[in-house]
Length: 122
Image (cartoon, rainbow, N blue to C red):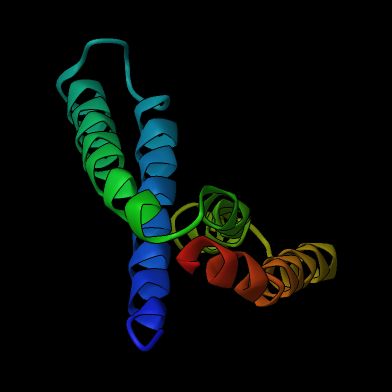
């Protein structure tokens, strides 16, 4: 059980990488099709999604699939952060409330996960 927190940290770093792919996708949309910058941005998208796919398999070996997918909702929060940092989008109270709601939902779901882990161990 001590290593479980390590897996969750890895999962959330992986979700950060996954959400970064959307930043490069949006950046690519601002360049002419097949220009060098367009291809560079989409190359980053493919690189990040490829890494995500490999490491996602490692995460779901160590966590129940439903728990891992529930945590994917945190990418909404990363989207807000990326939007503010990279694209200078405003963070509104509605977005903050939504992000808090998403995090609370993930935490609530994850806290109810212990019974499933114990049953799987038996």
